[in-house]
Amino acid sequence: MSDARQRKILLDESEMPTRWYNILADLPTPPAPYLHPATGEPVTPDDLTGLFPMALIEQELSPERFIDIPEEVLDVYRMWRPSPLYRAFRLEERLGTPARIYYKYEGVSPAGSHKPNSAVPQAFYNKQAGIRKLTTETGAGQWGTSLAFACAQFDMECEIWQVKGSYEGKPYRRMMIETLGGTIHPSPSDLTESGRKILAEHPDSTGSLGIAIAEAVEEAMAHDDVHYALGSVLNHVLLHQTIIGEETILQLAKAGESADIVIGCTGGGSNFGGMAFPFLRERLAGKEGPVLRAAEPASCPSLTQGTFAYDFGDVAGFTPMMKMHTLGHDFMPDPIHAGGLRYHGMSPLISHVYHEGLIEAVAKTQQECFAAGVEFARAEGIVPAPESTHAIAEALAEAARCAESGEEKVIVIALSGHGHLDLPAYQAYLEGQLTDHTWDDEELRESVSESLAKLPQAAQQA
Figure 1 (spheres, rainbow, N blue to C red):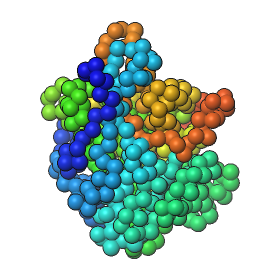
Figure 2: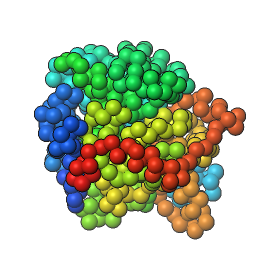
Figure 3: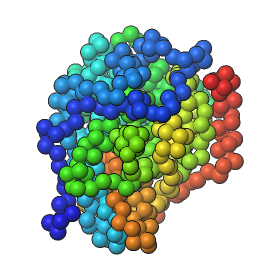
Figure 4: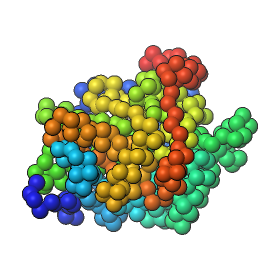
C-alpha cells in the first residue's frame, strides 16, 4: 500500500458481482439432509412449499456452483452495493500492530446491515409466486428492518415477531420497521399457539429466536397466500449473502492484497458464511486460502460448546430437523445486547464446514466485545452493531498477537452493520452495567441432552 493511505477501496457499479456462489457444489462431502419433523425422512421440495416459493426451494437444494442474480434484485442492490472495503489505518496505529486491517462495511445498506442482501431476493421470489405477505422473526431487529424494507420494494405485507428482550430494549428498531410498513409484535406473544404455550409456562420470558421463529412459521402455515422468510441458517440465505465475499475478493485484489485471516460474527451464520464461503472456494480448489474464523457470543456458544446433532430450528418443532451445532432447541440464551446472535443452533452449512475442520471458531464475552466496539468507533468513526463487535474483538486479539510476533498479517473483518440504534447498549457498557455470562460444559450438556432426548432417535442415527 502506498503512502497515499488509500483508505476506501471501491468497486464501480459495473464491477458488482451478478452471481451468487453456492458452496454446495464444491464441498468434499455433502452435508446431512434435512429431515421432516413428522416422519423423520429426508425432506422433499414439496414438503417446503407451504413456507417457501419453489425458486428458493430450488436454490436451497441446488448443485449449481453459481446462480444468477435477477435483474430486479440487482436493481435494488444498486441502492447501496457494491459496499465499501476500508483499510483501518487509524485502528492499526492505535493498536501499534504491524497487521494490516481491512473491514467490509455492510452498514451502508438501507437497513444498516448485511441483511437486505437476502431479504430483497426473498421478497422478489415470493412476489413472483403470488404471495401477499411474508412473516418472520427478528432478534436485534436488523433482519426485521431488512424484510420490511424489501417487502416495501415489492408492494408486500410484512409481519414480524421480535424477541421480547430486544423489542423492549431497542424501541427505535420497532419504529423503523413500522415506518417501512411492517407490523411487529414482541415474542412470545398471545397471537399464536406457540407463544401462548411459552407464556403459560414462563410468563416473564424475554423470548428467543427459536420462539419467534415458531410464531412466524405458525402464522405462515395458516394461510395459503402467506410465506415465511428466514434471515439466516438456511442454504439459500447464505447463498444470497455471498455477494459480500465476492466483492471483498475483488476489492482486496484492487488494493494488491490477499487475506491471511477473515473474521466474522456468527449467530445463525449468514454474515460469516456470506463473507467466508467465496474465500473457502479458493481453498477447496487447491489454492492457498486464509484462515476463516467465526466469532460467537460466550453466552450462546453453539459452535464452540454445542453438540453436532439433528435438532429443530424452532422451539415448537415446526421446522425440518437439521444437523447442526446446537445448544438444544429449548435453550434460553442470556438476554445479551447482541440480539442477532442469540440463536440455539448454527447454519447446517457452517456447522458442516466447522465439523470438517475447514473453519475455526472462538467465543467472546459481552464486555470484551463492547470494549472492542468502543476502541473501533474511536479510531474509525463507525459505531459497530453489537453483533459486529464479536468479529472486531477477535480481530483486535489477532492484531495484538501480530504486535507480539512482528508478523504482518492481513486481517479482514466482516463488519455486518452499524450500531446507531443500539446506543443504549453502549451506554450500559460505558456505565459499567453490563455483565458477562458463560456456560461450563456440564451446564450445556444438561441443556442439550434434555432437548435432544425429545427428538426421534432415528434422526440422530441418520
